[in-house]
Structure formats: C-alpha cells, structure tokens
Image (tube, rainbow, N blue to C red; front, side, top):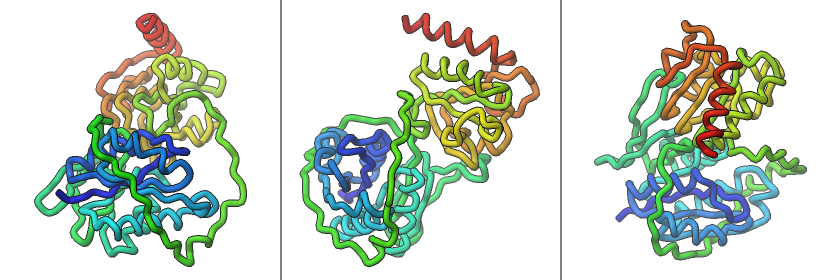
Length: 320
C-alpha cells in the first residue's frame, strides 16, 4: 500500500488535534508516515502510533525554533525524499500553508489548500474545498506531481487505529536559506482557558449587535458553558470590542466547527466566508431579514440580551 506523509503539528511533544484528524484522512489514501520535528518530536510517537502512523520520522535541531519556516520545509523535503509518498498532508494553519506551498514548488507538484475532506480517487486524492467565499463547493485533484494538501481543522474525526509507529531518525541537511530569517524574541500568548479558535468543536461569536466590549461577557458566558471558543465579527473587532486574534471572516480566521453560534451578526459575505463550512449553524438576531438567516440550520429572531443568557442558563442546568 502507498505511504502518505503527514506533517505533525505539536507543542513540545503534545500532538495537536488537526494532526490526528490528518491521520484519519491519510488512512483513506494509504499508510500514514508521520514527520515530527523540533523539541519533543520523539515524544509524539506513542500518540501518533495510536492513531494510525505506521512510521514516525523525527528530527530535532535548534534551527526549528530559531528561524522561520524554511528549516521546516527542508525537513519535510528530506522526509519526502526518504518516503516517496503518494501524497503529503499538512494542517491548514497560516504556517502550514506556507510550508506546503514551498514544498510544492521545490518538488514540482500542485498544491491544494484548505481542503475540508479527502477521498481516494483513481488518479490520486480528491479534495473537497469551499470556493468564492464559500458560495460553492468544489472537488479538486492535483494533476502534476505528488499532491501536497493542507486540510482545515475539524474536517475529519479523530479515530483510534493502533499501528506499529516505528520511530526512525531523519537525516536533514539545512539549505542556505534556512537561516535567512531569525526569530529575535517571543511573547507568550495569554491563555484564556478556552479552546483554540480554529480547532474548537464549538464556536460562539458576537457581532455589532453585542453593542460594546463590556457586553461580550454574555458571549463568553455561553461559550464557557459549552466549552467553546469565542469569535467576533469584523465589525466588533474594528470597534475595539474584542481582539483581532478572535476575528472570524475573510480577513480573520476561518473556522469549521461542529457547532457555530452567531449572536448579533448580520451575516455579511466577509463573515460568512470564515464560518460557512461549519457543520451546524445557529443564529440569534432581532432582525428577521438579516442575511445570516439564509445560511443557518436554526435561527432565533430575538434580542440576544434576552436569548443568550437564557440559553446559557439552560445549558448550565442541563450540565448540572
């Protein structure tokens, strides 16, 4: 069976959920071979094997932390040369898409970004994507070279599928460009205790209708009752009510959770582009003609200041 190379996103050996989803998709195409690099790379092996990796390639060097992107591309190319895979899968983060694009250029292959599903086809993997601000769904395959594909978080379930997970050290030679851009400082992001916005299974967002930074406490309370991440529309972010890092939309982050709850958001195309692939969409808006209602699975016409606290109370009661 053909091997499929999976780039591992981890933090000091703790494998992040999007990588485990990639292993599920990789098993549809062949035998997953995982590449883990950087500090704690070897510690990822047990988790990766539990989720289907037949082999885990590892490499650690200071370059991965001290320089931007290129050392990681060098490692992925070295793994590609060692494995000769049928496809290369990468988590669809900003960095992941840059790594995938650079690898595709180096190996003379096509690249597909932000896939939401993968299936095996007669001529290679077939990817499902959303196009034109999520107005259309397309199926795409790479026509030249080995497909390099980035996949959005929450596109596949995390499934246990124990495999051998044999660990092999990878030999990586860094290119002249690897040390071209040095990281001079890092600032730790303040933790909110909530899930990462792009990886969360549930996202609760607020928009212009929240009417002030102080009122986002209502949105946060609902999110916390559901164990959800908090998002915001561009209007709310531009008004200074919530950080830009939480913006959902075409100029913010793209999310695809199992459940998306939009509160006080009109549903402009800019926002829809960032959340339209959500599995179930619920909207609360007092304007019955708001465009968001054309998109939702469930809509509540009402004042979010009445509806959202009641929903939070109901969720809390049910959990209790």
